Amino acid sequence: MAKRAERPGDPIKLIGLLWKPTEAVSRSGLTPRRVTGAAIAVADAEGLDALTIRRVAGDLGVSPMALYPHVAGRAELIELMLDAVAAEVYATGPPPAAAATWRARIERVAQANWDHHMTHPWTVDVAPGRPVPGPGVSGKYEAELAALDGLGLGDIEMDQTLTAVLGLVSSSARGVISMRRVWQESSLTDVQWWESVAPALATAMGGVSYPIAQRVSTTVGETTGMSTDPEGAFRLGLAMLMDGLAHRVR
Image (cartoon, rainbow, N blue to C red; front, top):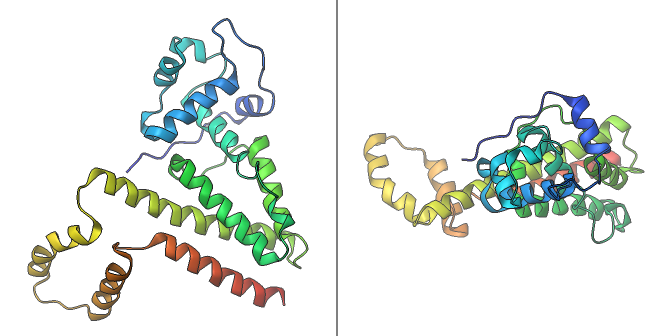
């Protein structure tokens, strides 16, 4: 399991990095945008554990000290990365608010965030905290609130609804990404793994029976080929959330 990144402790310094980055090219040929792009490439390919100032500097062909005029450290660099990829979410295609129905608008928000996490799996490893919103994160928040505006929800309800949708997406995406990491490290499918441990587990349980759990887990395994189905849970959970929202806005 990848480590969770800590949020930085100097918000004032981070505000300047996010909102007023210098575009001047340093003697090393670097800009904050180029440093951030190199860091994203490392995290996309190998995860946050591989991300260090030294590693990014090496990929850019400079010394680690050459990066510090552009980023204060690893924690601040991760915030720049998050803001940069947040700006990508609705960079192509129509914004969510352009969809014909409110359900389609919410589905667009959910699917765009799902695709975002699948493209940048490291984003699910960043610990919640007090993130300083940059232009990418702020623009994304505005676009997503616009998808909820006009439904008859109050401002607090709009924020809470969006938080619920994004929480469902991120938790389910984390489950899928974690499973994929396990599959990459193992030569066994979920079904094969369970078959290998089942005899020992049955002996350890000493005849204790959990009939409903056994029935449900067997059905899930036979139907999906997996021990659990986070993406299926995401699709069902989103449909149920929208059904509840339809009842509320009525």
